[in-house]
Amino acid sequence: MEKIYYSISEVAKQLNLNQSKLRFWEKEFKQLKPKQNDKGTRFYTKEDISTIKKIQFLTEDQKLTLTGAREKMNQKMDVVDKQHLLVERLKSIKSELQNIINAI
Image 1 (tube, rainbow, N blue to C red):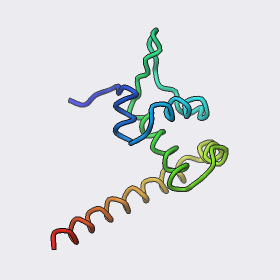
Image 2: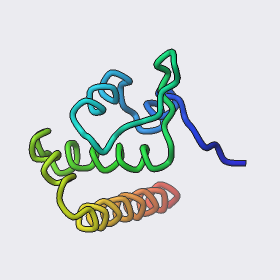
Image 3: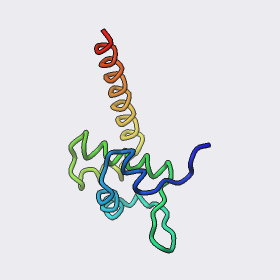
Image 4: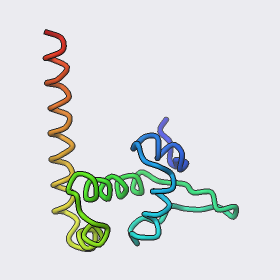
């Protein structure tokens, strides 16, 4: 059974990010709004994680500034989604090829 909500520590570990960066991105990007309980504990959905991956792609892979990433996130998302999916596929292919080379 798959989880519906993930804690900030789970998301940070999964995406190799600092928790502080996730909290900072929440303030910088209106698209990222995880649910919070009365104590302020954050609960991320799969959609939130997908948004974080897009922000991570724009800032780390595309080397955009926060302002540039914010502008891209406000544009048509299908372009960013397609670019992100393409990069993810290429990384997967690279990893598989590296495994083949290592096996030889």
